[in-house]
Image 1 (cartoon, helix red, strand yellow):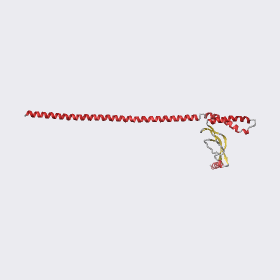
Image 2 (spheres, one colour; image 1 turned 120 degrees about the horizontal axis):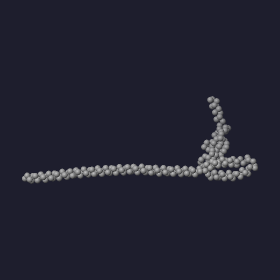
Image 3 (cartoon, rainbow, N blue to C red; image 1 turned 30 degrees about the vertical axis):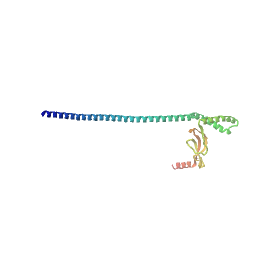
Image 4 (spheres, rainbow, N blue to C red; image 1 turned 135 degrees about the vertical axis):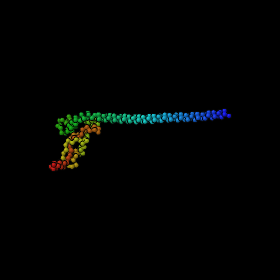
Length: 214
């Protein structure tokens, strides 16, 4: 009887040991699974962080790339503008050198009626040369600034040689005489027209009164 009890106890102990072992193995397995899961999660997080970092670097690279393209395009436009400007005004220095001679031709030809009769045929011969000079200058964009008596004085295109008092108040700050012609090349001033400008008599009267009071 005792042997049966012992055998039964041994079987129970063996069964308990097996169950404990299974529990331990199960716990160990769960622990390993959790560790693997945690390690896998860390790896995923690291990859996600690396991916975010690469995306940020790619964004910065794109920004730099597009900015460089924009800068190059702006430089190209600037160089193109400067090149066209250089072509447009390439004759400016030559025109400035020719203008004094051109003006002398102009003054002589325009005063032909006041010259001695024996000189007139020579001056008329120069007229053809003068017209050729006009055509050559116009082909390079050089043109005369149109100025006439009564025009409003404009410091951008006129140079006042002096001012003179005028009886007619409507001529105050107006051109009352053209001394020399002005010229421009395209839209750029070469030489302002030299003029005399009208001024009011009242200006001097007021100035004298002010000086007297002082």
